[in-house]
Length: 268
Image (tube, rainbow, N blue to C red; front, top):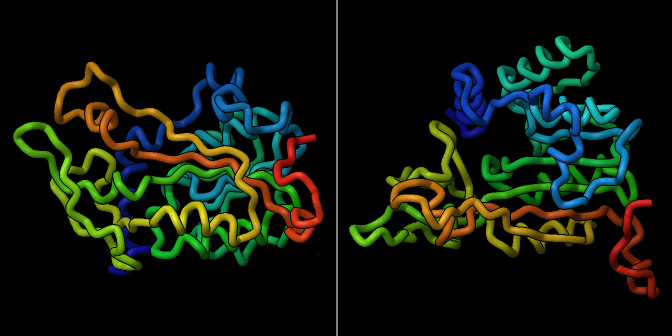
């Protein structure tokens, strides 16, 4: 089975089994959707009428919150079962969504420069070449459009086990290239049944810049808890940051940056 089929099958199973990764938006969350979507204040004060692409974000959470906030929402996801959750919740709440089954590294079904915002949760680990994803996002975003994405950190994906002293062991090469990651004993931040890939910092940050984006902010969401017991994913989160979240803006005229235009733009 090729990795795309394997990941589609795995996420279908996670959705069908009501995994925590397939949690739909609640009424309480929909009452203040931007609070749920944007704890960092990266989005405009209102997204009403804006065209938003929820990329590799099926599951009935992100899309429903954006729709509740008044956005024109498109969802692209590899898993039909995840998309069915979006369809079910949209119908139940009276929202209209455009749902597309497809891979994040091929958005040829979408028009160029057609979105104001692309919002992507942790998912780039499921494709071998992140540069292809960034290129596709750059193509479909409008000039100065916002790209919010979250990724698994390379170090987190290098962890293979923990020892008797509760130390986390790195056993995967940083330069694994386009090869899929091997199966490991420590699966605290792995999704069961999926095939994943490690992307180096040069690819995560440098690749985003080379695709025509200016990075406006970068944070490492804390998933650790100092009171967590060894073996719990929150214990590991105190030692290895599992995720990085970035806000970037597509700049069509990169030459403007060299002519003295400020390198950071703020939403109008």
